[in-house]
Image (cartoon, rainbow, N blue to C red; front, side, top):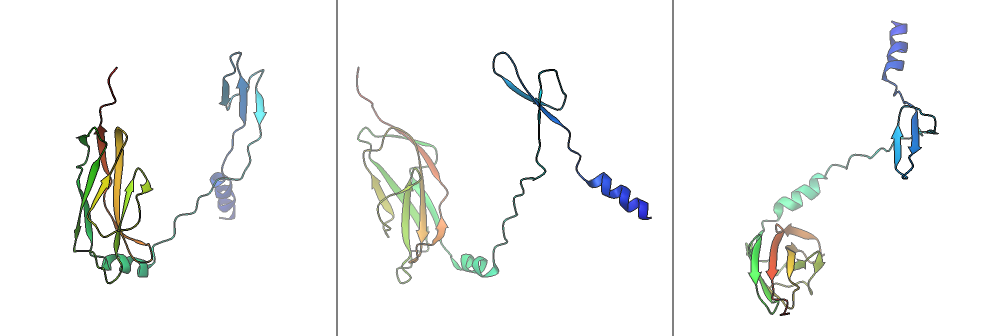
Length: 167
């Protein structure tokens, strides 16, 4: 029985093969486990990259999120919509249910291509001006008075088709 544990120890320990590096005439680098005449042996360290698992969400945070009854969606522009507007103006329209709780200081944060637009507001529409032609992403979030996100809309991708000028 004692020999079984010793044998098991050697079986489960990782077996590392030698690694060799070669460079051909064109400068292409190749790594392999088979030696060759012009191969350089690479020393492989035994330290492995270990990434810890994320901590579980505390129950208190999960309960706070459940208390947030908001549903938020972007109703205009629609997902993957092509918007034709030569001036570059696009109106974002949002639907929030139930209404924002002004007593708690809940407001909307509009984001356009990953950047916050203006300050937090309670308005359900936002006018973008002079938007470059191309594809853009909008996200709107309900945030509380501390700036914490209570609910985030799904991102909406739209494509602005704007006349670039004649040639």
